[in-house]
Amino acid sequence: MKHLLKLSGLMAAFSAAPVWAQENLRIDGLEIIGEPVDAQMGFQPAVTRVAQDIHDLDYLILVIITLITLFVTALILWVAFRYNKKRNPTAASFTHHTPVEIAWTIVPILILVLIGAYSLPILFRQQEIPQADLTIKATGNQWYWSYEYVDDGFGFDSYMIGAPALGGENRKTPEVIAELEAAGYTEQQFLLATDTSVVIPVGKTIVVQVTGSDVIHAWAMPAFGVKQDAVPGRLAETWFKAEKEGVYFGQCSELCGNAHAYMPITVKVVSEAAYAEWLGKAKAEYAGIAQPLTVASK
Image (cartoon, rainbow, N blue to C red; front, side):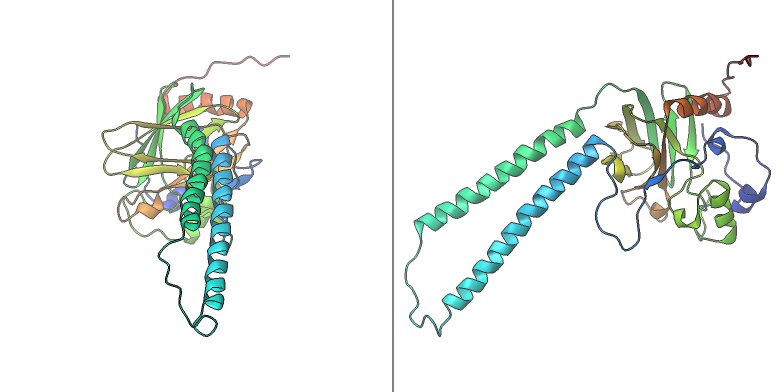
């Protein structure tokens, strides 16, 4: 299933390549949505129900801990002012205060019950794998991903653009920039874009089977709210349903060796028509399955 290793980024950028299935599906017309932005805070846009649930839960907990922090800070300042030695020269001698002790026991319990009641349904929704419209197997390798479209009988490897398969320096050289541009990206997508992408149809339930071939990796896609460890010898599952067409970037999120930072993930969410077209070409390219002939209407 694995491709022959690329000779170099220079040859890939400037050679006259055949019309591959991946090259036909450029990012032209697809908005880059799931991309980290310099000097910004917060999450990437959520394009799945699970990702939106995670954002909402994070906001809820942020509100709760902010209120607790403000309350505790105000309480400390009030106590420091009201009961300092100058204002209160004779210290109190009581050992406890029953209403206060009841309050600081009951209130945290209620807060935890609120968080649990909100978070457990989200956790169940993440862990209960629905019926798949499309199943993809993702295998983590040092340091690239292999993908298999289980139901369609083909697969391919996915390397970071600019990362030699045999190691070496990963630098944004003119040759690498040329290779990025040839694939429809800009130099801003260096360290994010891959030479081949996972292509999926919009609005369909995608189940990803995740495993590793050597050490532990992790398949993570922030805009989908997905992160699943890839453990050698084990087959885990995660799922998502992307509701918006676009290009999304993720990363291996489990430290897996010296080139861990150079095994990104690129997913292109396209229309059903574009996916059907890509699928036929991908079967021909990766599995040698001939596409059916079409007769042009007069």
